[in-house]
Length: 382
Ligand code: BJ8
Image (cartoon, rainbow, N blue to C red; front, side):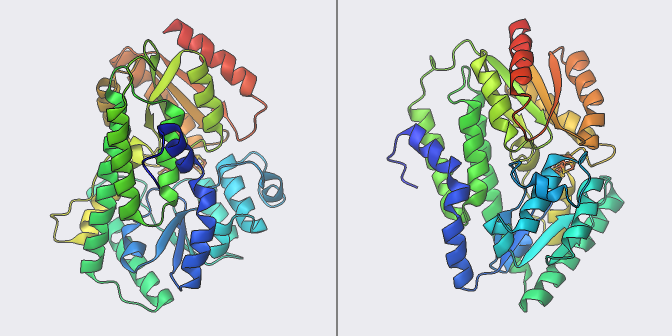
């Protein structure tokens, strides 16, 4: 990635990254590099990386293969699950095709049941994630991470040492730090970039397979944005925090509506944003498995029950990013985020006295007009 380019061209390059990674992935396969595909931020990517594997995200973000998925899955299921299954079934996504192993995790019920079906035609391993953050939950997850290491060693006929894991913990932590510094730029008032630009980088970086190089590029981009800061660009805009389910291709629909109507997304409390990047793995802990288990089980996804960590994260983000309004977007049939929205609304409006809006959507564009009208009315009222 050439950082001598103008900022819009760099954002565009990140946006195209997923598509541009198909050929590099093919070349890595030709060289015999193992490919591990995953769906969730609870997957400790440091373990496959420690054996030299490339990790790739498989969460599908378009509605293209939903009709194929609906031949096997119920229609009233979360679009993320249907789309992911559809891409695997039709082999339309090269990342599914190239993955030697697909790793699922016991998060929401829809995903768990989908993995059972996926395992009928793909090589699938499911991580048993305890749905409660507790001492026992952390112990269980630590054992589960060790089991995952053994599965990889057996399937790929290799040995993963603790030193290898320690190295990959450091590499991933460096990327987390760089990303935090990047999205932390939005604490500036007015912010230096739009929410869609920020999203392009957060999403695109996941498809850069040379992690240290990608981290260096994110750092250089952060510096370039600081150097070229124009306070007039987003002056007077209402500062929005976006939360809820991972919304994939609906991001453009929702963020577009926010930014066309006088707002700007300054913070993503979603996977890909603060929820999944915020915390580092403790590099000083001599027990690498414990360090990983503690960090990963702390991710405040609504699959955890109870999930007080998400409220704590809100306390911090609302203040640090000087939020004017919170918009929660939940995918159709995503029960955990849907139910938890009650607590989030109460917390945001009663404890912080900040306006909150909830909306449900799917991967289609049929509700784009309605989304735009509701967002415009919400921002008008701030
Ligand atoms: S850590 S948010 S990536 S589980 S699939 S829960 S949208 S009904 S994706 Fe997720 Fe991991 Fe949590 Fe993040 Fe709802 Fe759909 Fe389930 Fe979903």
